[in-house]
Amino acid sequence: MGKSRLAAIAAALVATLTVTVIAAPSAAGAPATPTSAGTIRPAYYLSLGDSLAFGYSDANLGAWLAAGSPMDFRPQYFHGYTDDLANALGVPAVNLSCPGESTATMLGIAGTCPAASAGYGTWPYTGSQMSAASAFLHQYRWRRGIITLSIGSDDVLPLAGACLGSPTCPRLQPALNTVRSNLSTILNSLRRAAPFATIVVLAPYNPFGFAFPISNVLALEVDLTIAGVALVHLDRVADAFTPINVTAAAQHCSYVYFGCTQYGSNSGDVHPTTAGYSLISQAFEKVLG
Image 1 (cartoon, rainbow, N blue to C red):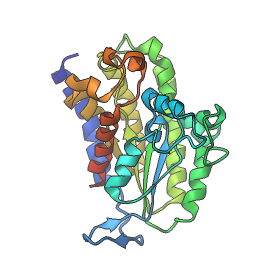
Image 2 (cartoon, one colour; image 1 turned 120 degrees about the horizontal axis):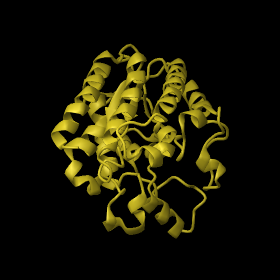
Image 3 (cartoon, rainbow, N blue to C red; image 1 turned 120 degrees about the vertical axis):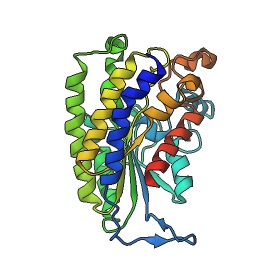
């Protein structure tokens, strides 16, 4: 698929994201803390979701294992967009995300955090991520904070083997129906717990776009589904697809491991490189203004 055609298809996503940003509530009436620069510093930054929010990559996992598998699974070994965005906001991140999390496991209706149950060090909570998020937000209910959410990719990744070679995939629609339903429940729950928060949902990049260009059609369908749910809930959307799969498509291997032989054994990893995580952070920063 040519870059010009892909850009045209992506225009539908960009249009959706534009409407989302315009429609999103500003929570201007909530208590907040002014900074010395005159801007408003959020009372908290809560990062939720899957391995992207966590900062996972096979390379990062390798560094953790090489360090002797410290009991704390998260700190310096898994630097990702959450860390970059926290630095940009000037607010420490509370990161409750979980590698392998789907919309169903996040809600606790199909098990809970896969990484926690796999024995990867200590975990900051038991039970579902959604329950942990609600408990955290309870103490900040009337404060103005920022919540970022990356979820839905692990609902559709199991279909990659069957769907990568075609612009159509009948098995995708049932998975997207699940994403719509569960993501709506997640956003409703977050809004009830944090009525003054700014919630930003990630429309993910396509890790297979370089090796399987036709897969961008289905990836956009996934992104439009996620963005559409966010729009209905008047929440914002950070677009990772356009900067990685359109603008920097020719530099794919600088931002994503998958399909790039220079990464050796990590060339099958669907996660971003350090530079890729930085681009995703910038997508969130753009939406937050």
